[in-house]
Length: 167
Image (cartoon, rainbow, N blue to C red):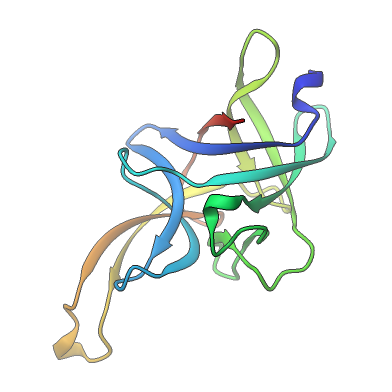
């Protein structure tokens, strides 16, 4: 277990039945990153997270999680949760919330391969499918429409992630 009681960088790939893809940052209609985390297309590269080891319990490993270099403009921004339960990068937050990694599969050395993630209140990250609309007037409400699978802790299908370690 010593191999997991340290900080590391990794990408997360959702492996939940019916939901497969890398975790990435949502973009609005103009392509600007919004900070909320979503599942990307399988061909799309995921973003890298910095997992800073804090502590462990009998069943969970506790980390502070921040955006790594490729999460720009959210590099070093802490992972947190909005009032509506959306998981994302929040640059205005000074201290990152502790996240609990619950290992669901290990390799032969005891290193986590798959996991569930829980916020500081113990709520598991889930996949919440949402249709996003653009436009402010009802008659001009069709500028774009995109199905998005957001990460959320209050609603959705519980998400399991494969950990893809980065060197």
